[in-house]
Image (cartoon, rainbow, N blue to C red; front, side):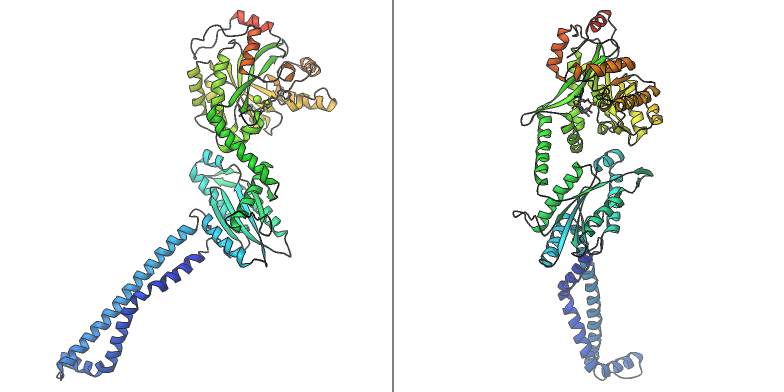
Length: 562
Ligand code: C2E
Ligand code: MG
Ligand code: MG
């Protein structure tokens, strides 16, 4: 069995190639050897005569023999040179062939085997030990590796993969086989020690720990984690698979996706029930891609209310997928998948463009809030793209608010700060969503240019259900007050919670008490009934909307309850 980089096959191939090619120069060697025998047999006495004749100390008795001796010496020299040249050529050829084979068999970046050679050697190993040994195939996939490439560039991504490979090599037992299958995917074939089967679990934990240790990219610390799936060679072999290794790779892949869905940075052994989950996930992925092409993602709108006055102040856009297969799908299902697939930016841009069009028909006093994924905030062109959409729809930036969650701040706060500053320069407002659920320090939050914060609904919904809930809410609200920013309470479901909030302080609020999120058409109907539709097309993006007294009056009349 092989360790990475041991180039076993290179040496084997070199020997093989050499023996094949050595036939060519046997002839040259044979001629030289025959000439030497002839020379030893007949030439030695004649040679001394030739030397004496050349020196002038003797006479050449038979010039023909002398000529034959000289010819013999020339043949020996020629034969020897030819043999040496051909040996060089053969060695050179062998080395080139061995290198070509090595390139075909190994992954250049890490020195590990590649997918093809791994499958071949693993099949051989498993069949050699059939009946005597069992193997575990471990599939390892780095978590959110795409973000490293997007954020730090491909050279940094390559460096991370090399570092990962050397950490795997350190943890790997000497009798294991390892490969990089492509991208950020690695596979390990490990013989299971029947006396100590728990060694595979220990190895999985050791791999997880080794990769979770800090890595550095151009002196910036990045934290990588890995998800693992493990399949055993003595069960669950798919009968239709091309080979045992292909079947194990498939099962380990299924288990690895299960680990991804269960929080990442962990491992799972394959179980047959996981297969259904993966198939469903694949269907969803294909459906999301198709849905984006077909325009199946639509904005819904949830009312936002000033709790003191009861006025409608605007709407939060919440994405919905009108899937022909699954019906109306909530964003908690499809947003994380769209992020993983790398299509969240296209999806979100489609939704925002539709929402800007919808909101242009509303009273210009009404704001539009949109949620932005952390993935989008990492796109250096994001604020330009947003501005382009605003210009194209002729929508005033002052009416737009973007909501970002604390998870956006987890990495690269300075890049996020620059992005938020650029958005604010355009007049867009920024709110911190789901406040209280993240781990950001107040100092960190104070440094960022937020205009408001939204207290997560988990703190609001149960506000009246006991002293503890009220205390927690008040603690969170006090933290928000410490930041000196207006607050919105999410998830108001009852009059009792509303009354509590009104008594506690100045909040904006939203929740099912005011109605469930509605489609664009239903929102228009609601606004038409409240006489809150836009009557005149806004003149230009650059100018803020004039605060028309008439529309303010209408807003005052709209104690908008669903
Ligand atoms: P969020 O931004 O915190 O949105 C509020 C969520 O709470 C919405 O769920 C809303 O329907 C729900 N909600 C509002 N009031 C109540 C209430 O009184 N009780 C309860 N139980 N729930 C209430 P939804 O629409 O499923 O959205 C979930 C999350 O998905 C959003 O949380 C937001 O983070 C994300 N999301 C929605 N649309 C988009 C989008 O276009 N892009 C991105 N990146 N994320 C989005
Ligand atoms: Mg939100
Ligand atoms: Mg929220």
